[in-house]
Image (cartoon, rainbow, N blue to C red; front, side, top):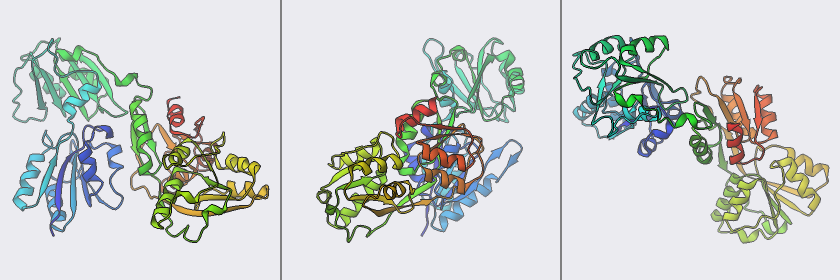
Amino acid sequence: MTGKIYLVGAGPGDLGLMTLRGLEVLRRSDVVIYDHLVGEGIIALIPNNAQRIYAGKIAGHHELSQKEIESAMIERALSGKIVVRLKGGDPFLFGRGGEEAEAIMEAGIDFEVIPGVTSAVSVAAYAGIPVTHRNFCSGVNIFTAHDKRNLIPDFSETTSIFLMGVGNSESLQRKLLETMRPDTPCAIIENGTTSRQRTIRTTLSHLHSSIVSKNINPPSVIVVGKVSSLNLEWRSKLPLARKRIIITRPENRAEILASKLRDMGAEVIMLPTIKTRILHGAIDDVNLSSYDWAGFTSVTGVEALMTLLRENGRDIRELDGKIAAIGSATKEALTSHGLKVDYVPEVFDGYHMAGGLAKFGGKILMFRAENGTPEIDEVFTKYGIDFTNICIYRIDYVKLSHVPDFADIIVFTSSSTVRGFAQSTDSLRETLAVCIGHQTADEALKAGFSRLRVAEQADIDSLVEACAR
């Protein structure tokens, strides 16, 4: 059975600018052939079981030739694989997507083109430059500065955008000066939409010298025209602008945190270091109504119990004792299922929860992870409390297949996320670790992180505030 090929535009680099459709097919891919300009946050979302083929092209060095890339796509699709050809920007704008589509059609393979946000417009927008403005220009031109035919027209009253122009900036400047004024405003935007974005504003007569003196490197976009004199930049004013933040919590639990950090200007890379697995059959022979208290340590525990109840044809009416929860998120999860929470410790960790329940007394049933932290058991034993643990889910560590070369902050939402990260890589230990609580911070310290910051409360908003601080 023949597979299918998706030509996917990954956008200019920022994960938030990749389309929903692109992310959808990426997450169910068998093979991903990706370019040099694909953002780190997007690469991190490639499934761990997918084959990764790097097809980056840098000036003077091509990892694979164009023919080899096309052959790799076709061969794997013919073997029944779902192949994602992941390209920076938009696949049909200087991305050789047209050539690849022609090769796929000739091979008789089904394919789909998923457009991407082009750097020609988005990078300028992130630098506060509208490529069209009715008070300045009546159109926009998009060129490749690698045009060997040198067919750059004279459009002095429009905006001209040049991709891949850093290496050819001297000849580009010389050609443009044949038809344009030397004082024409220009902007060079390096690493657009990422945490490393840099914008240099100059004039056409100083275009090449500015690139050299400021040590501008690819990938960069050059904007030439009157609109380059405008500075409507918005991103740099956000609290986490130019910060790259790694989130280590499970993929299905990370999006709210990631969204809040992106709202504050951060480039977010999701690297889940753990995943949870429900332990089916865990409550089969348990009389839930025979306990005075039921304790929950996480949202995952709440959802796992609800799944197990449904599987057994049972429901929450069996929980007729009082209910305790660690943290506001766990409380909200219980409330959403119609359960009233009677106790939440002031400090959102197992040690303080166990200490609080010990004061109430009675028989206590704790819904736990199979390999969770032991502090709760130690406190209950110390006070002679009658308690029972039911392990309803397990935390498995995820081996990271790709770790970025740098980050400004790593966010850890539990001790297990720290252990998962530590088991995957020895890198990034100099990075600031922002932790959800003191137990997590202690684990990060043991793992070799020396720069630590702890959220004031064990919740998402406090984590975001700690990152901003």
